[in-house]
Image (cartoon, rainbow, N blue to C red):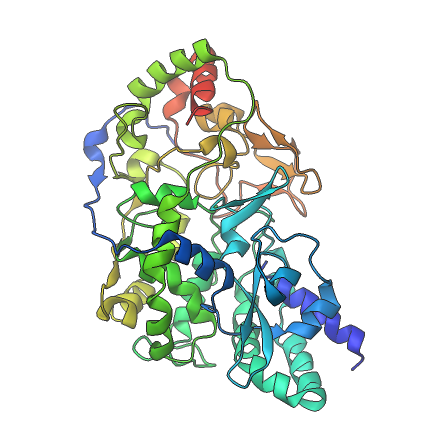
Length: 461
């Protein structure tokens, strides 16, 4: 096979990593409080260095082939040194056990975004593209494997575990539209192929894998410091570090490797706790924001928390019957009994400072720090504007984001988008299972003036 074909394959492989009745009440008594779990402490600076340079994902593809395929990065947002300075922030150079140099995907593929020319750590990457998943087919990996075996056997041995895993999981990660994330789905697929006690890989799935691919939006890392549980339905309890290191499952050989990686994630958590949201950079109407603060406190703070001198966050789970948003994320990704049992009997739950999964029929009401910069909204990114969050009648059924236009709309608090009358390629169709934009009708009772005031107030958070 010609070298150019191999380079195209590598580029494709890396691109993948990259009618309801409205609830009209306001009854927080139906909400469920999440008790606090004491977390490990660490060094935030060390945590950043490990996120940017660490080998928590220990496998990848050959460094020289990566550079031939994509070239050297023109940016160095993380201010890394050595070989890491030559590649984009979404990847990390690691050493294989046989000494070969590999390029591995890292956490910043999903948890950092270039915003107004700067990399914002902890901002969910709404540019991520999982729509290429269908191209990650076994044939492509078989061709790459054959080429490396013949031409570079040492490089093949170095990246064999990565090829083995990626060839298996690729077909399961395709989303219907760009901008939504398949990380929850990835966790389930990886668990299906690993022994829960040893983490040994199995080419054959040990658990049933659902055919449904339910997307999610990526929550901002800076919210974690206020939360008592992780994930959209708050089912991630106990030690947060164990959940943060889950990407290790991509290429880990055994739990001995996981134990070493785990020793760094108290530092990583400390770094995440140090993050704060970007400040709204445009002028704010102070008088209108003051009016909005009153409306927000009266109508929203019971679930989303208070800000200012009496800042507090209630850590409440809102039942499905109350929130009424698309339920397929918690029903498919967060309540699969096989996955829950796998995790709660795995090394994650039985080792030091354990974690566990506690399913819930509903979603957590998140903190709203920096919410102005986190469009699109709801847990599946189905609502493009903050106006739509507060007024369900204004939510488009079909809409399309222009990913070539990186300008943010600071008034609508949204990315540039257009609405359409029908579904199609690249169009967010809220009629698809898991992509629904219904629910969260609490703002419908507000007047247009009140909604405008609340939006102005949210710019200050």
